Image 1 (cartoon, rainbow, N blue to C red):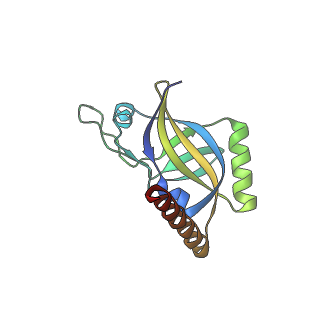
Image 2: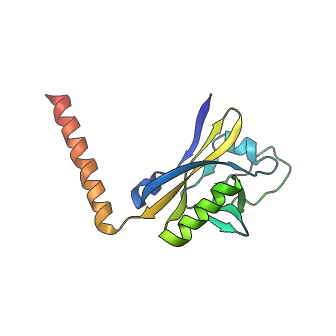
Image 3: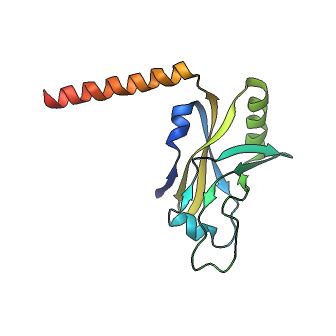
Length: 148
């Protein structure tokens, strides 16, 4: 199993508590696949929502492929390929428990473009400060051990 990371959303780990992760396929058009496999994709401002029993990713930017003849909107809405059972579970948790869905990373798995999405709960400001403090403490300890 060969996996190649194409895009990562580090901001999601800072802004949310990640509860569950899911792997989904992406419905892509024409030259988008080549562009994504070349690493010309960004999910920093992307978010996921449901509409009529289907899941979509909004705001995912795919730079148009230079040799491509088809003109595709770089930030168009793309459909996520998930099982109906997974969609129902995600929609249920999102509406009842106040969770949100965020994209974590886009990667290539055995030649197919996949996106990892997460069921996440938003962090408050004091939670963000706490996680920054924990990271700084860990960095300081590692530096001290390295110099010791």
